[in-house]
Length: 366
Image (tube, rainbow, N blue to C red; front, side, top):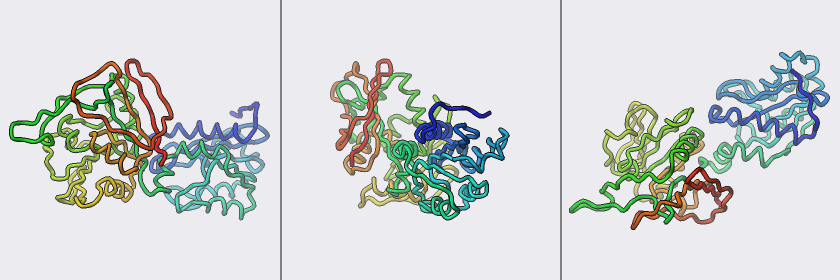
């Protein structure tokens, strides 16, 4: 049904586009989240969003709803608001720009330009050439923030990188390692320490469901034996990434259960099994750069790095990260534990309490 609005400014309608776009979270990658509304005389006569990768885009759904609502004859006198530039190429679906031209929509208001090389202004150019009035840049920052993973991937040619760890009130990430007789700290197992509470743990699983991949180092995989899945939240589990340069990890670990695609970065071999890929890197180059480049080639748009401290610090020291999420338990303190990573060039953007835990979110200023 049509819905009247009390404020027909461009910002108002673009906010609605963003609300709709968010409904596609977790289902559109590697495509961006996009929302669209069709406006006729101050009324929303159709709206839609990109619901799932490979399926109809937001503009298609908005026009289809307008037709279903009995407004087919009004479309050619309407304005289309869309949070991202309409596509102009054939991908999984036909170009949305062609559909807009077909229905003779006279005006299109766009939140931001699409950085994907197959679009990147081509949709705007095609619409202008057909005589469509174009307005670009309404709530541009908000539209880019919504698809920060997509924009980072296509502008920086790397995935959006989120660092995550939990630390005690005295800044420790794990108990001290106890090396075995005749062994080394690197070879030893550390007793498991549960720092965050059950509510924060559930939130972590939600975070996992929102990213394309999750990365851990050798010691984290060996000592914690994590599944790295989204058991506590509805949604797809991310691709599991594990650093194991010398292939020391036991095949009995949970990350090697073949239930979720797993990529092992190592210096020994390059081969593939069922749901398990051994991706060879070299020891004489930056591991962080090699991982980031590999993920770009594999078209993985985002990764959450969950440990350990050495791997996390490597991303920080290289200046290759976008966001850090730190869960702190101020009441828990341990003696002589492993120090948590230290952020640099960071700006805190939010802080919230989750019962006994405090969650701080930082953004890189690089």
